[in-house]
Image (cartoon, rainbow, N blue to C red; front, top):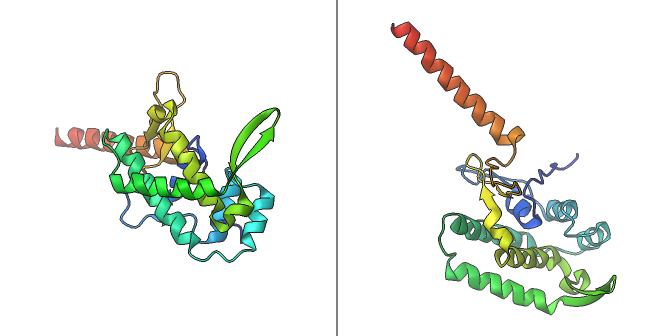
Length: 201
């Protein structure tokens, strides 16, 4: 049976990772990475893992890595939500991110690519933690970049995305997923109220 097709609307792998929870505002959000295999499939879909790396990692015992990925995702959502609200993330969340980054540094390697040096989290050195540590690296890069000011949150489902429009006018995660649904609901209630006013007359 084919797995869930990930909706990669975030404009950044870290945001797409946070968006693997369907509707953070729901009482019981749906998890689109219920297994470690699904997490690896996500990592490959967003380009955080190569197909070869995903295959190698899938052959390793995951241990507690799925739980740690879920904890990271919840932490990243809290940090992004705080930033969106104009608040500072909690010291505990930032400290844990720093600890994860330190773990990533131990698995980091410098590679020469096209005449430049590039720092990467080596999948063999990181083992099953490769996806998580690369996502942590990406989150820190996002938090310390100017792109953070363009991160927005869908008011309907709570998903995050980079607003790349010139006038920062993007409101929804996507028109197909939330924009059209909200517009349809608004249209329904507007027409319902007009009908009720006509009846009252």
